[in-house]
Length: 181
Image (cartoon, rainbow, N blue to C red; front, side, top):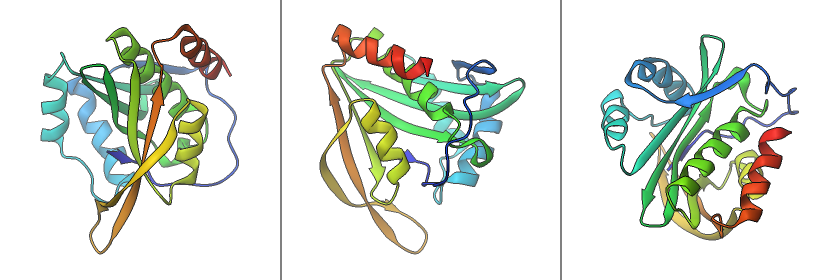
């Protein structure tokens, strides 16, 4: 899974009132790619995003918009009762403004609606800010994938994280609290 590198710094004010989360469509891919290419050393291609969007039975992708500006996106792959967060990224200039929180909440809600009992993801070991976000959503580390991220000149391990019992009412309440902040 690809997750944007850590852009540490103070959290910016929430944009909740202006932010709109909606399903990703083919027309969004060009703007998604602009963010993807900016935040990831090894970005996904347009063809990969389009093929993921075609798999509606087992995939869900969302975008975050501020007005007409696309500022983030995230993806989910369902396998039986496990939801795998495949990607989550926010425009560099909009990071740490709760957009990632809102996108992850949308993905988790979609996974619950599809019958997920657990969620999983991989995150760079160096990306402490993302790891903290995931912990707030109940994710806990369970292992490491050696050299999971193969970048141009080096490799980095991925921390494997899981959140269990996401089908319980308490998890729905957690999602409501996180999205409302």
